[in-house]
Amino acid sequence: MAVSKAQQRATHKYAKNHYDRIEMQVPKGKKEKITAHAINHDGSMNKFLNRAVDETIQRDNEKDNKE
Figure (tube, rainbow, N blue to C red):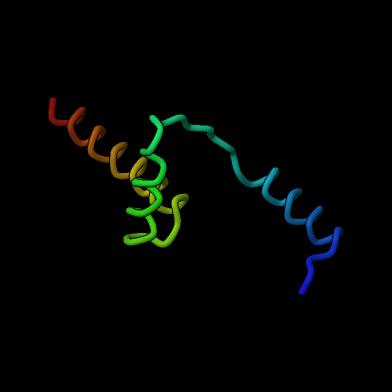
């Protein structure tokens, strides 16, 4: 089933209003490793990267509070 132009516009508008985009550069070959890991654990690279960022922030904050 094809997606209509109106649906594409609505989806784009929603994403623009509700999400920020971040571009990330990694060395050649690393993207494939990240993608494979993400698929095996979270199902998507976006979920995996969000989880990795959240866990790192939490760990850093806990470390900062101990000091």
